Amino acid sequence: MLKFYHLPSSCSVAVKTALTLTQESHETMIVDTANKSADFLKANPLGKVPAIVDGDHTVSEGGAINLWLSARNKEARLMPDLASAEGAQALKWLFFVYATLHPVWVRMFYPSRFGGEGDGEKVAYALAEKELFSHYQLIAKQLSDHDFIAGDFMSLADLYLASTIHWESKVDNRLTKKFPILAAHRARVRNVPGVKEAFVGEFGYTE
Image (tube, rainbow, N blue to C red):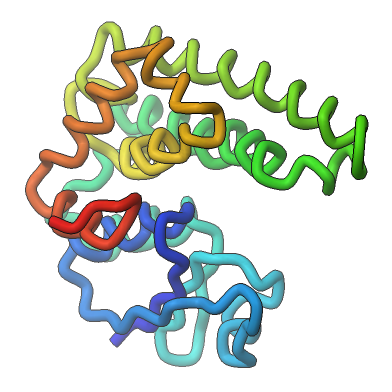
């Protein structure tokens, strides 16, 4: 059985959802960010979720975990054939969300890490906010032609993208006001069988 280290409503929701869709047998360990356990830090010395322990080896980094889960469970069809044109698009957007979009959210939530306190913090936040909306503008353009970010099928990229849209309270819920298509995408992903169940207990969902 896999051991899954998770922080509710965080980036690890995408992994929680992939675990649900693949029906991988797992035990969820909720991380106490104020008192990180030795077992968790052994799984990921950086102390960041998500992390998976599979017997004697561990996997961290959400995108890597989900690609690993997809490879172990091809019947779940979480990704197209990676050698195909569709696979290339799915990989492109998966890495865009994890490597380009996610770091901007980190700057939004923790601006003092990048600009210091006071005015520096305000400047760091303002710059991150501008970049965040620029990235979602690209995403909204892509979604104007497709139901999902990489085409007409849901992929791993959508699991994390939908999760990030739920963080919009950090910008006064202006993301879906400016880009209503993001709200439609979020709802479309949640309505995929299995996703709704995985989102229970996340982002305020009770059912």
